[in-house]
Length: 399
Image (cartoon, rainbow, N blue to C red; front, top):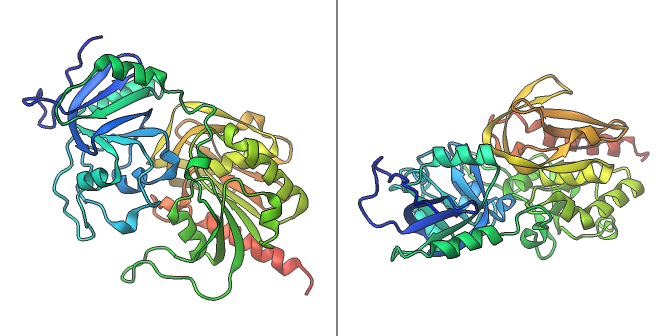
């Protein structure tokens, strides 16, 4: 095992003892400056190319079981604040950055990133050559890693190597059960708007059941802003429990892990809903993959996945190209789509599937995240399309 000569945040070799170590399962390791909580995290390593939104990324439940390498060097420069959390606590196991977090400069900041990570029990490592690390991920695939932060700078490299090699990986892992809600609840908070911030939806709306496989809060806000009365239910909810609420639409959320594993219980529920009712169905990310599996398609593990906020996606139904936010390590295999299901969206980076729809029913889903607004509003029409489908169904029912 050869010692790595990763550079410090000043561009030169370390002049002080490193306090963190990132060990890859193949034996490569990177020393750096630790921040946040002390301890050990073992996970899959991915990279994200977004230039903003690091707090939303760290609190996105879809990152369960992963450590995130940020390719943009200025991570931490706007601090953190309670309004930008996508769930109650960070879900990503740790973060890897080029430069150590600096003093935040933003009027919305309430806390430093490193203090926030420490309080939330998450590990960070700075001073790493993230370009080199990202190239390795792209060429070799998402590696299994062990990340340790120890202020005394003492590391057992052999033990870290064993821990990284022992990580079972995300294939076959049902992580939705780890991040879903414990019980159902109502959601009425709408999207942030100047100058009021978040407001509450009032008045009647379309009754939607949202299945929480690891739902981001801003997805629920978008549903509420589009005119939905949202009831969020756990990942293992049955079709009978859903239909007992007499919903006008079913939403399938984002989430982490292997879709085939979560599909063991999610797919039968979705198929039963499709068999017993004609309500519109809309899915995002893992929800997209769950719907595809329920309709008869298959999913596959990607080499390094899509993680970023600048992914161009073409909508075949309109011919338009949207700039989208993505976060997924698995994808729907478009070659396995059955008769009656069409590919509606495709990635212009690699041609992978980014959306499907049934030909004769208002049932559709997308791989990207329309609520993340990188365009910034390129994909919000999807929520409106869902609401329009519910409205059309209601109008078609005799009074």
